[in-house]
Image (cartoon, rainbow, N blue to C red; front, side):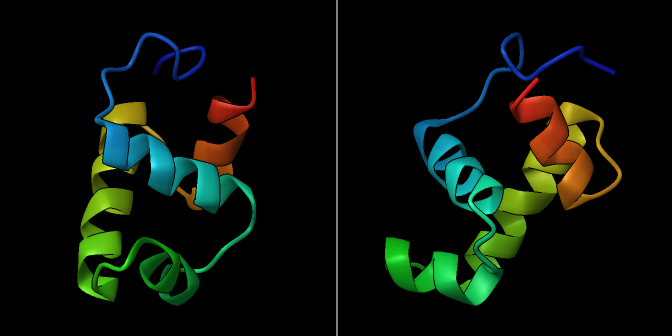
Length: 66
């Protein structure tokens, strides 16, 4: 489990999705803002959770803001 996400290799799109997740946006809002499908947002969130070793969105945000 990383101390923070600084050492985790994230794509530019994953960083955008993470920023929006951290702002409290839900998948539908993120999809609308980035002009991608909700399924694509779910895919990115799943990748972020896996890469971060996080069990939830709130844990992911905690790692991102650590």
